[in-house]
Length: 428
Image (cartoon, rainbow, N blue to C red; front, side, top):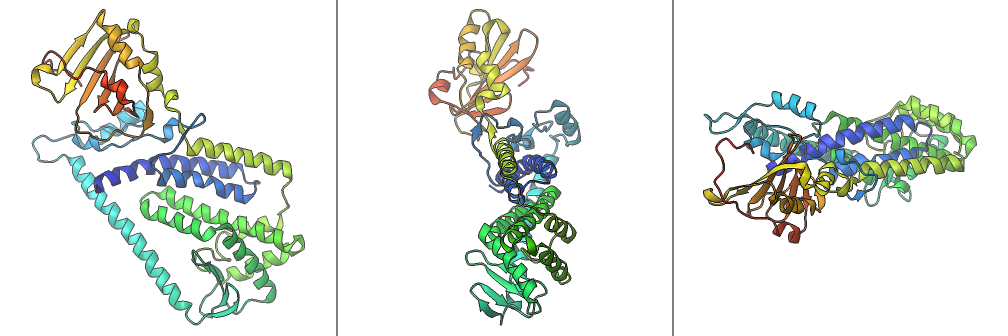
C-alpha cells in the first residue's frame, strides 16, 4: 500500500511539475491581468497534484497524464521510465541500476524502499511542524481583546493577520493608527470573503505531500504572492481610489513588523505590492472578459486529459489493417506451457486484426494487477516495427504501455491460450 502511494506521488509530482512551469509562464504573460484570475490558474497544479484521475476534453493534453515511473520497474532486468520521449527514457534508463540476479533484491528495490519511508517521514514531519507552530501561535493569542465582530487586538503579535478556517478571525496589534487599521481590515476581510484561509491550508497540505519537489515550494510562494496582490486590489477598490497612497503607506509601515504568519498583511514582496497598489486602475470590461476567456482556456488545457480516442496508441489500433501486418504472435500467461504461444500469418491476420480494431476504452494512468492473467498480441508490421496489445483480465487493454479501461464484451472475444510452447529466446 505504501509503495503504491509512493509511486503515485512520484508520478503526480512529475506531471505536476510540468503544470507548475506552465502556470509560472502564464503568470509572467498575464502580469497586467486581474490578480484573482492569476490565482485561479493555480487550481491547475493543485488538481494535478491531488487528483489521480481528471476528466477528458477535446483540448486536454495527453502528456500530463502518464505513469512515468511504474512499480513494474522494480522487477525489470533493465529498469526503464515511460515518459513518451524515447531519448529521455533511454538516457534515464542508463542511469538506473540493473537487476542483480545473484542478490535477493534488486538495487532499485532498495532505493524504492528507502525512498518511500523517507517520503512518509518527511510528510509527517511537515504536518507536525505546522501543528506545533499553530499551538505556539495560539498561545500568543491568549488574552486577545475583542474589538468588534471577528476582529481582535493582541499585544503579543508583530503584524496583523487572519487566522481560522470555518470562522476566521482578524488579529491586530494595538499599535496601528486609524488609517492603518482601515487598510488592514479591508485587506484581511478580502481574504475572508474570498475563502483564502481554506486555499492556503490546502496549498500547505500539498507542500506536506510533495515536500521533496522544489517547484512545489516555488508554487506555494508565488501562490501566496498572488493571494496578497489580489486582496490588495480588492481592498483598494473598496476603499476608493483616493485611499491608494494611504494604503501603500500602511503596507510600508506594517511590513516593518512582518512575520512569517500565513495571510499576514505585511508579508510577501512589499515592493511589488506597493508598486501595484500605486499603479492600480480598474480594468476595463473588455480586458476582463479577454483575460477571463484565456484563463478558462488555460485551465481546460491543464486540468483535463486528452480524449482516449485522440491518443496515438488508440488511433493506431483502430486504424490497423491486415495489409500493414507481417505477423501477429499471441502469448498467454499463465497457462499450461504447451499453450502459451500462437503465431498468426496469412489469412488468419484478418481475424486477429479485427480484434485489435475493436479497441475502445477510457484511458487510465496505469492498469492494476489482476488475478485473471493476460493475453498479449505482439504485432510485427511490414516495415519491421513491433508493437503490442495486451488484454489484462478482460478489464484493461494496454497498447504499447498506454492503459485503457475497456469493454468486457470486446475483450472476452480474445483467444485465451495458444497451441504451442513459447519459443526459446522469444522477446516479450
